[in-house]
Length: 427
Ligand code: NOJ
Image (cartoon, rainbow, N blue to C red):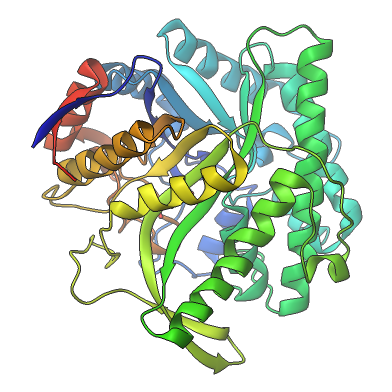
C-alpha cells in the first residue's frame, strides 16, 4: 500500500442529470417513456428525487461532501417548453442553482443534453429530420447567452454513443426507433450538431467577454471491450470502432468515418473538443456472432470478476487503459465526467472509488493529464430503464419520503475531497 496525493489542480466532484433527479416534468421524452411502461419496476422519472424543489438542501449535501466541482445538466424541455418559446421561470431557477454552487466555491460543468428531450422535439421527428437540429442549436444559443457568465465549461452531449445506440438502433430508449440506417444518419447528425454548438459556445462566450477559460467537450461512454480469442479480439476492435471511434473522430476532429460519410456526414477537419470527457464504468468480453438484431457481436461480463448490483464487472484498470489509449491519440486533458457503482449495501463503493483513483494517479504519474474526477452520483436517482432500482448514490434516497441519508462511502469520499489524499493500493 502507498499513500498517494492528488495534485491541488486535480478537482474532485460529483455528477447528476436533470431528469434523473428533478422530478415533476411532464414535457420530456422520458416522462412519456415511463408512462408507456418501458421501465423495469414501472417507476417514473416524474418522481425521482424532487431535486427541482430541493436545490438548497442538495447543495448543502455537495458542500458537506466538499466537492470542488459539480456536473449537472439543464433540462431542455423546461427551458424551451415549446418551439421558439423560452421559460423565464426555468431560466431563473437554473441561474439561482448555478449561483448557489458558485457561492459555495463549486465550479459547474454543465451538460446541455443528457438523454432527455422535449416531447415536442420528438413529435417533430427528433434527430431523424436534419432540419430539427436547428432547435437544439437555438436552445444551446439561449442557454449560453443566459448562463454563459456563470458557466465556462460545457458538455454538449452526454454519451452520444449510448443515446443513438439505444434510441435509434435497438429502440430501448426514446424515441424507440430501430435500424442501422437510422442509427448512422442520426449519429452523423449529432456529430454535425456538436461541431456547430462547440463553435457557438466559444463564439458567444468570447463576444460577450465572459470570464474564465471556455472549455467544451462531450461525455462519451467508454467501455473496455476485450476479446479472448483471435476472432474475439478482432470483433472487439470492430466494436470499439463503431461504439467509440466513429463518435470520437467526428466530435473531436470533425472526421466522418465510414459509414457516416454515406449517412450525411461531410468532413470538417478541425478541433472540436477542449477536453476528453470519459464516462467509465465497466468492461465487456466480446464474442463474434452474426445476428441481424445486434449485427456482429455479443458482449458479456466475465464470470470471474466481482460485480456491482447491476451485474457489471468491477474493473478499475479499465479507467487507466481508456485514459492512456485516448490521450495518446488525442493529446487532450482528461475529465472523468462519470464513474460510479450501483451498490445498495454500500459494501463496495469506497473501494471502487479508491481503486479507480489509484489508477488515475498512475496515469498522472505517466504524464497523462487527468484533471477531474466526477463521481456518479450524489444520491440514488432515476436510473433510466432500471427505474428506482439503481443505487449509484453516495447518499441513499428514499423516493417516497425524499429523505437523503449518507452512506459510509460518502464520508470516505468527503475525506478524499478534503485531503486529496488516501492510502491507495499499490498497483
Ligand atoms: C451513464 C449515464 O450518463 C448516467 O445517466 C447513468 O445513470 C449512469 N451511466 C449509470 O448507468
